[in-house]
View 1: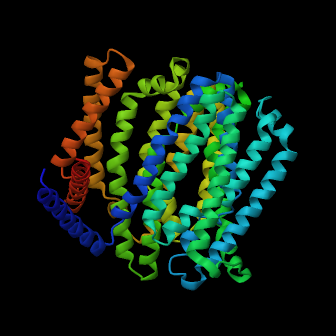
View 2: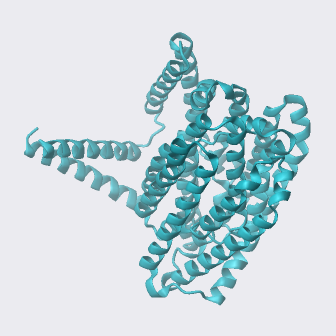
View 3: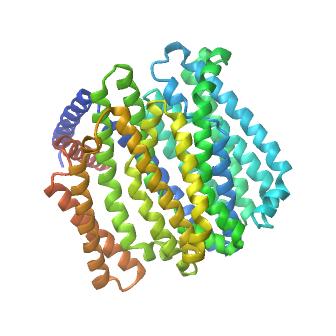
Length: 522
């Protein structure tokens, strides 16, 4: 291709991209910044996806169960002990002006102190935790867990600060680089040494690197304005207090079923259950990226008194999340057995029923109810809502496990989550002053659900005719379902004109840059 052709192509791409950017700016959409965040986290998803895949093959089932329990404890404490100080920055940083550095300093110091307290408490409670969770191997890794948790707590606000300051590209790059580095620090020791202690030591080394990056960014972004301010700290704690209690309850109810299984069964059985609890990182990537941008935009609209704009943003985010999650659930249900077997080998085949039930919960993720309630400062209601979920999970667990065995534990958690989403929607309806008929984009959601169901049938058909091996079955089902869903999405008008133009413009831009790069190498 001639240089003039490349230049022309790039010029067309730039003009299309410029038109799209102007359109997005005019509508103040969540589409572009959310996609930026998603792009970085998708890179991380690809990298971190292989961590459990590798470990399931290089350590035995009991050690793999211990590894999963290690990170279950970490994730539980990391969320609960932040006291809402990292997430509160979404509320305080937009429009903070010169005081932004003080809010960040308050959050960082608080989180670092929380990390130190956690380190001491974990060391003291080492034996008790091991006995409670029926895992005799856990004590030898507790020091590594305490160090990893303390370091990660101190750096918890990094991407939040970037996002709240609208540095979406920076946040995207940070998400991607951080997850890739974490995967490398876990996988390399696993492959080279094949020992769990080496893997967890790699996790601590990664946490040190992330903390250094956090300090470097904060120093660059806020320079001399980053200092602790007791008055502002009081405001943050006043906001974060009820919110933190809500987070504690949310974390307890979200993880209760896994702790209960660990308490009730041995480490190998917990490994089977934890594999069934497989979280698709892509889901968290899309959902978190979208609702974080949504919170910032809705908070701005609320300060301006634009209630109609808040409803518009809510509808827009809900519709787009459904476009992604409904077909994803359909494809995962169709290929659940193949996903588990190919990822974790046949020895985890018993995890499939648990995984199928867990997958249905993804469909509820299109409702970013917690983010909307936080914009309205409904932290007290969030706390009550999570208390209801915790009570429901605890009440249903024993009965459902007795009836359905391991899948029953997951069923109890999913049902409790569905009830909570319903109660949250009722509250949001009242806050926004709209009826059920206007609360959600019902027509779009219905069309998306129908398209996803038809795509699932196409995937099942392809799997039946072309699925000779797990890999071929997964490939056939995924490709058929994706092609059918894409065709229906275009046919039914599920994508709006601006979104189609945006995706087309970016595709042309990528093609143009690829051609230019290839030409430059000739």
